[in-house]
Length: 102
Image 1 (cartoon, rainbow, N blue to C red):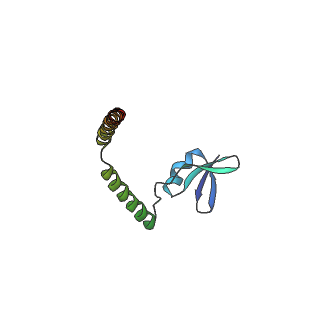
Image 2 (image 1 turned 90 degrees about the vertical axis):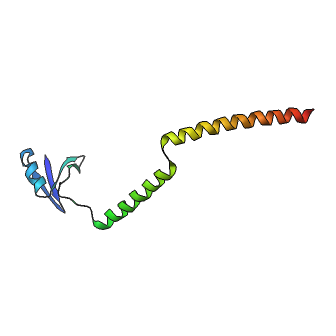
Image 3 (image 1 turned 60 degrees about the vertical axis):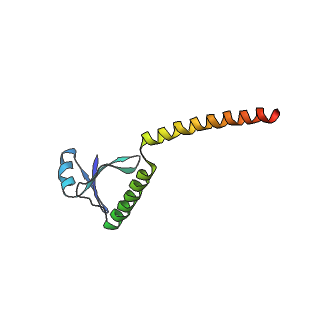
């Protein structure tokens, strides 16, 4: 059994009525374990402007962080360079120990 849900209204509907209720702004849900589980949301739903602004700001911040981090290729190049420099440092430390023993 399907339910059309809008606000605090819950109407039992048939499968054939699903499209018309979606067009009227209802969500379509079914009952599972005594709870209504949404199957489809109404295409006419909107996001409140305050929530949109918050998400827009967050999106802008994340894009800036992504640009600052650089591309994946750049990160891989820096990791290789870091590894190479660590190896050279280890060799230099080894030589210093040898010179210190003499």
